[in-house]
Amino acid sequence: MSRAKAGDGEAFRALTEPHRRELQVHCYRMLGSFQDAEDALQDTMLAAWRGLEGFDGRAALRTWLYRIATNRCLDVLRAARRRPAKQWDIPGIEPPEPTRLGEIPWLEPYPDALLEGAINVPLGPEARYEQTESISLAFVTALQILPPRQLTVLILRDVLGFHADEVAEMLETTVESVKSALKRARSGMQRSLPGTGGEQPPVGDSPAEDALVAKFVSAYESADIKALVELLTGDVFMSMPPIPLEYQGRDIVARFCALVFASARSFVLVPTRANGQPAFGVYQRTSDGIHGTGLLVITLAGDQVSAMTIFDDTVLPAFGLPSQY
Image (tube, rainbow, N blue to C red):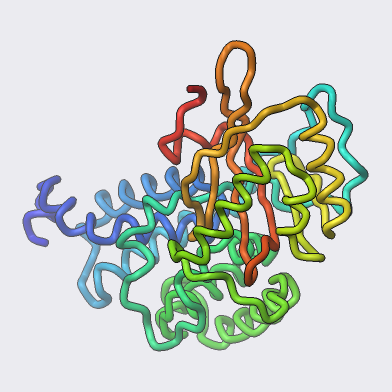
């Protein structure tokens, strides 16, 4: 610590590097955007480097870093720096009338490759959510609907398990204010999180998950709409940020997929993982090669698919996927 305070960059990195990945995930939960989270993390580390001289050691270094990261993210939320919704721009396909329009066009997926060492960190005694649940797309989306202060308090208290007095100090407010914000945030999350219908997803990277994913890939790549529909729950949900169109229900989702398959598109799915869920780089075969069109993340419930989230091709590099083959 003394060397870092004296300006030794290597000493500073040795102190902060063990916390870097969990801080990035924290920023992602707050902001819902992988790119925004990367930017906020860089701002956090720069602020920590510049402010290290004022670190008095009363709180743990990890807590101090979380305080900086949290307030950097709050600054972003207050400034509302979000990419705008995108218009439907796929030629030759007229999408069905959406069930509703999404509120979170800035949502981006988070690569599982960056979760190692980030979601198995020791949690405080107040934590209420499993770390894998708290990185899922459904959870992160529900967080984004909350007002910034409620979102922040819920993450710090129920996801990370910080005590109310620690959160109050981080946010420069009172314990009573923290408790009030948490109560409202929990109520908001209860309304926003989708129900599971009692069906639990198969364990990640298990034979059951592998079998279901293989069926999904086979149906999608062969444009077998009947086989695909059999894999979907009755209330399956589909979204495609930053395009705000959202579809709920097997029939309308099947109709959307049928339109895509009928457009003479031939697809290749390249497996990866995002937000603790199966995901695929989606590539289209054309006369001049195989071109990336986006990233598809699926949510599993029992032996079916309960949600499909389709992101555009700008997220492929974060997953180490090429723009074309």
